[in-house]
Amino acid sequence: MYVVFEGIDTTGKSTQIELFKKNEQDIVALKEPGGTKLGEKLREIILQSNFNLSFNAELFLFLADRAQNFEENIEKFKDKIIISDRGLISGIAYALANHPTLDIDFLININRFALNGNLPDKVVLFKTNAKLIEQRLSEKNHDNIELRGTEYLLKVQDLMVDVLNKLPIKVLVIDASKSIDEIYKEIRKDIYDSVA
Amino acid sequence: MYVVFEGIDTTGKSTQIELFKKNEQDIVALKEPGGTKLGEKLREIILQSNFNLSFNAELFLFLADRAQNFEENIEKFKDKIIISDRGLISGIAYALANHPTLDIDFLININRFALNGNLPDKVVLFKTNAKLIEQRLSEKNHDNIELRGTEYLLKVQDLMVDVLNKLPIKVLVIDASKSIDEIYKEIRKDIYDSVA
Image (cartoon, rainbow over all chains, first blue to last red; front, side, top):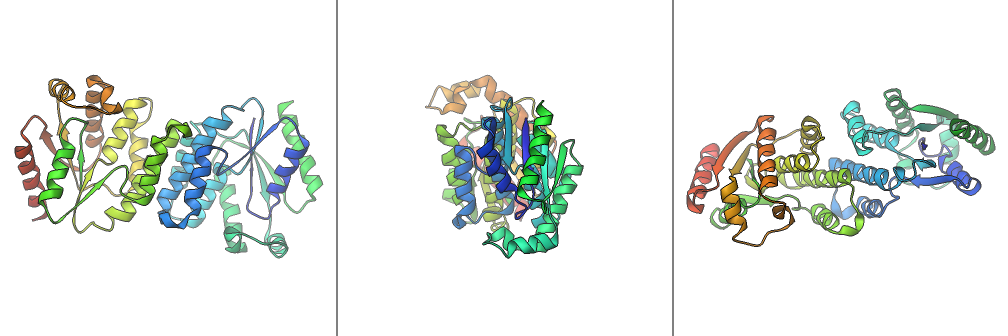
């Protein structure tokens, strides 16, 4: 089962993935971008400023990473429970947030192509709100994406919902304001009920 | 003006490009893949076997190269005569030859996206036949693509024609059996008549 945890920064997604990695023996934890030798190399290229990447080139590099990750990891572990930190939903939502003239259906098509026509079996969507974002942003250091502000993050969150509404994927919506323990139990129950 | 020289190996495409580079001061010679810092890096990745590239990942790397090349070179030199050794026509034809289940329209769409919706102003298509291919293959050393044989090369050539038939691009068809000098004059006249 291929489960993708999606949500903007500050929603506690990574905290939950760490908990699953620590507590459950039978899961395979993956992340995007990365997770393959190609992915690590492409991550380096994307982060290095000296390539002056055009927007389209960067988009294709993310898709190459996604395609390689699908064939090298997701196909291989499909009989286990795969939990991935991000996937195509984030990919499409951030692309749309940064370039609103892109066509959402086109982006969905090329992402499905990267997954050989497949989709995740489930998306766990961590949802937040302006007050909670600001509270959490004030608590810790944040990378460039987070520094673009609350309004940007909420726009990305709305776009994730738009993308999910267009895809036949089961979604578990998580209220990010709940406690770490509550959220963990809720996701765990949902996933293990699905495979039971 | 963005002119792309297309044709399978052994058709004399590269010989003509060398002649244009040597004889004409006002042209900009480009090639695919390559031509940008990103392109050189991606070429390295594609040629190194240790990444075990999936087909889809490789396709996206070629598209990233094409997109970067468009933004960094073709956009910049669009007021000059750009002559490119290969471009989207080859890209799509080789993808289809190797993976016949791919959808030609989908491939055209993602390639046009890589070019920000643009297309070459002209394609010079070098056409050959079985007898000429075999004669030329016997004359020199050949790389892996060429070693796949005459039938494969002719299939790629047919696919190039199929792709061109779907696109609103002016095509100059060159009979590859003509002499180097005849071909050079024919292309030169066509290009300079177009910009006159």
